[in-house]
Image (cartoon, rainbow, N blue to C red):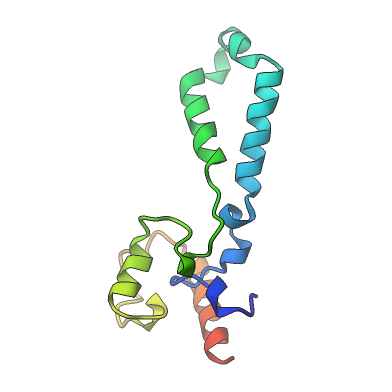
Length: 129
């Protein structure tokens, strides 16, 4: 658990543990792109039917390579279109869990219940510090 309140996002996620901030997915995608170029796999792609469409695969791989976040959520990092951050900031909350609608919030529903509970615990621990 992070000690610095700035690493905790409005939804309670610890940004320092996020794959986007740690760049694990991005670095792996970039390495795979290099390996594919090195192996000249683009030209052989059509010969392996189960690999599917190369252009779509490349588009997805490029997207994964861009999943890099150098700043924490509170510093403007993360998803620039995050509805949770926009809502909490708009209401003047430090955390969306301050809201009376937190249990029924449509913006939080995509986050699994266990993850929401973990996020709430993160926030409660910080409030006690």
